[in-house]
Length: 381
Image (cartoon, rainbow, N blue to C red; front, side):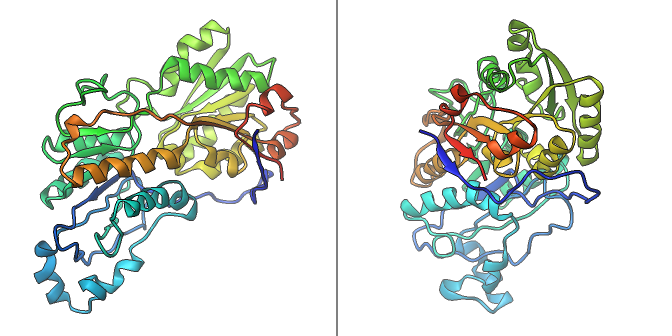
């Protein structure tokens, strides 16, 4: 039975309001074992979010590495932790609930409490090109584990180190990329979660959209082409779309401004629906994308439920909190001595179908009952 909820996000009407990127959790973090004493000190540098946060890290350093620096800085809190620790934050509340809270909560169940057993540092960068320098900085800081939340961050980490353990949060196909030997025996220094975007998975999303729109014949595909990923949504939709005779309209997006042009193109090319790639880059502009879909009256399908909770029509994809809960399990095992190459790469086991009936009504759509009964969550007010 689907979960019925109310969301405080309505479908917006056309406006001239300027949209800015959300302060989402950046894709590259690092964590360090607190060591035997489980008492850490943190670098005093604060994160900068004056630019769109596209990549960042969380780094924890061993107490012996920073004890002298902390003494020089003075003004420390309990257990030697700097008072400014509580202010070192930058993500919005939605992302905290999706990623940070389940990740940190799971670590706590394993005996790792932020602020007591380890400290996080947050940094930001304006573009994908800055990921590699950030990864190099983490390696130079002698971190114990790097957690990379998406494909580009993983690629930057892998190209930077073959020794520091890397835990994947999301990825398409690490075997195809050559990062691991196999899912069962990854080898090397990388393991974690692999959300492999297969033609079968992309086809299922397409079928769900068609179930909602039985006359669907042309679909716009909003995707980010800059990622070094052999399995983008655009590529994986080719086979299933041909099989069901649905024409695709390519809508590549490199920046925020291009999202607006993409919707104009979708209307010009008579796209009757849209599918949006699940990627942290596009996720920064999730509210803008949702708003544009409403303004242009295009029914859109998303990979992550957050879009639907923000006013999008529907989503089908991995349960994000579960993915980062499992990522925390990997971190715990590695910090306790496990070798990443011996830990099998897992794929998400829970996929959620979420439907926003308020948005459907605003678009003049009637969602078939056969689809509603399959939903895990229905937003109706």
